[in-house]
Image 1 (cartoon, rainbow, N blue to C red):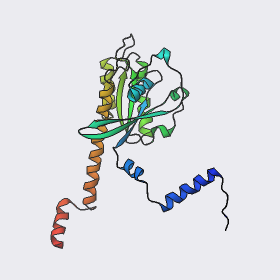
Image 2 (cartoon, one colour):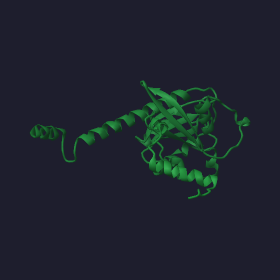
Image 3 (cartoon, rainbow, N blue to C red):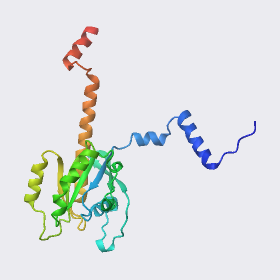
Image 4 (cartoon, helix red, strand yellow):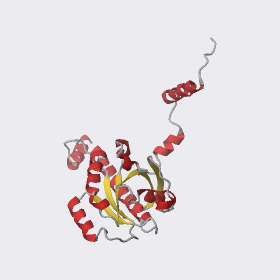
Amino acid sequence: MPEQTIAPEHAIITYSFKFIEKSPLPKKSLTMATGPPNYKIILCGEYGVGKSSIFRRFMNDTFTLETSKKSTIGLDQSSRGFNINGTDVKLTLWDTGGMERMSFIGSSYYRGAHAALLCYSVKNKETFTILSQYILDIVMNAEGAKIFLCGNMADCEGENQVTDIDIENFERECGDVLSGMYKISCKDNSGVFDMFKDMARVLHQEALGKMTLRRELNVIRPGESPENDESQKKKCC
C-alpha cells in the first residue's frame, strides 16, 4: 500500500499523539518531575511602585532608572533557585508587565500561585491605602496563596511617606492574612535577595508540613485513631 503524503505540520501532530499513547514518558520529564520544588509568586500592586524593578533584580540582579525604561505590556516570568536548609527550591516570579494600567489582569495570572507579593511605594501613601483591594483579588483568584507585604523605594523620602504606624495599623487590620513584611530598595539592592530567600523558606516549610499531614492521613484510615490502628494490627497477628 503506497504511503500517504502528509503536510509537515500534520506529521508533527500525528507523531506527538502516537508518542503519548504508545511510549513511556521521556527521562527528561521524569527528571523535571523529581526536581526541586517550584513555587509560583505573583507581583501585585499599583503601577509605578517598582514591580518591574523587583522583577529585574530577581531575574538578573540589575536596576534601570525610570527614565531609561522602555514601556512594555505583557506578562513575564523568571525562575531562580535558593538553598533552604540544605534543600534546593525554585521560585518562579510573575510580573504584570504594566497590564494593570489597562485593568486587564486575567485569572490565569493568579492561577496556581503559591504566594503573592503585595507591593507599594514607601514614598507614596496612596499606593499603600489601596492594598486592601488587591488582597480581595488575591483571596478570590489565588485560593490558598500566602500574602507577603513589600515596601519598595525604602531609600527615598517624601511628604507622603508611609509611616511605621500605617504599617502597624494595616497589619492589625489584616490579622493573620500576611505571612511576612519587608522593606527593600531595588536601586540600592537592599533587602531584595533576603526577602525572596525568606519567602522561599516560608513556602517550603508550609509544603513540608502539608506533605507530613498527607502521610499521616494516608496511614490512618477514616474513623480510626493511631491507637486503634495499632491494636488492629496486633489482632491480625
